[in-house]
Length: 194
Image 1 (cartoon, helix red, strand yellow):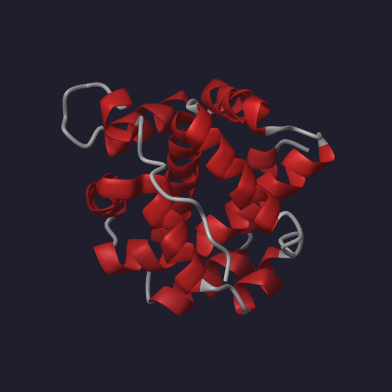
Image 2 (tube, helix red, strand yellow):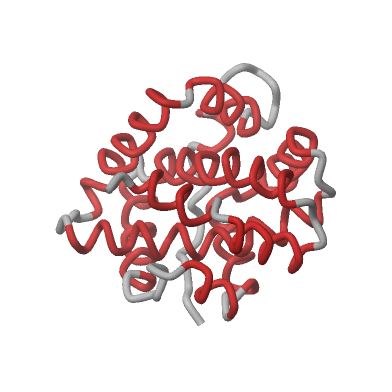
């Protein structure tokens, strides 16, 4: 199964949407829109980070740390999700653009920025756990991570071109039409799992 199908299928079931909605005080339809934009946004940021040797190495370590996370049952995982770890993941993935991305996601979904942060800090560990499992099952090393992520995003672009266009706008922090300068060297620190 495609990772995007897995994530969107499980994350968009009513129980999970209600769980995320109740936890964050957000409307379920807005949470659903945030999932559709937020997951590809994180994936695209991870792909850009993995395009450098240091970024790929850092991401490989992070995915190895999360590969045994119990994300197969997302509903159960969310009951005990470590939002503090999720916030750290967002800091590493989005770097200096975190606030801009949060604001852009809030504008796109109608959510408050604190609601965006709450939901995204719950989604980030799920994404890393899912990617960690895929990395392990396909025996992908750090040099193959950018290709793995590009493949995932390529599949997403084929089915959701409008979403990927919106994601590019979300990530273009300085509004110059290019996201490369905005997230090219974000991976300054290593992910650390508590």
